[in-house]
Image 1: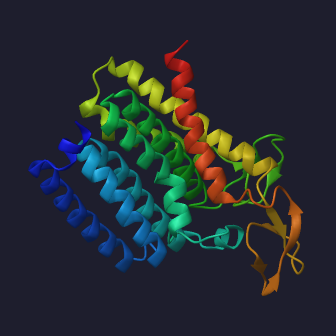
Image 2 (image 1 turned 30 degrees about the vertical axis):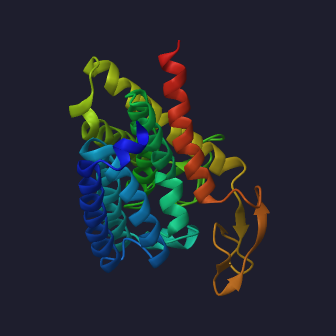
Length: 272
């Protein structure tokens, strides 16, 4: 049954159209510096899989996340680029960032194609809601200078430091979950109020998990010149030194765990 579906003429046509659309999106994104070369290649294959196996139903949510998040990131950088010195990577996404934010979606669309269950679609929206909430919390939370607090101790920290939260950032996280909720609502066959609660709560949960990990086990470095805490290997022209965290737990790993946390919460909530 699966083999016959794959070699069906309509499926092949859909795959070719999907790959063409993916190529156009990747080409434009690369030209606009939304993606690095490695990020473009990863996005082409990931988008090709999601567009082909999931159709427009799965395409709209991830395009909503990618396009809006990339635009917000670019605009924030023009508004307040000082916080870039704290981030490991710039707003131009490489393949690690692409897979951290969308790799789980690629796995879920394959499961959806194999088992034809909308349960996987809900998990997909929950994972996107979490990574979108986290991304928008960071970008909108650092749009302007604002007080930022450690999520665990509530002590004031420098804006841009991992594990920091702010009022504006929290509003940004909520906005991200709402955007993803609306992007998938057309294909939802359940009570809308319950659906919004599921996606918004799971997204915020994933975002808070991201901040908690950022405040505890995410790798952090210290600048030997200015003594600022950063994710970068070099700061003020000098190599940074280890400050705290686990060496392999960088921002990409934390982002992936955030998306996974959103899906796990959906599973828990639907089985209570």
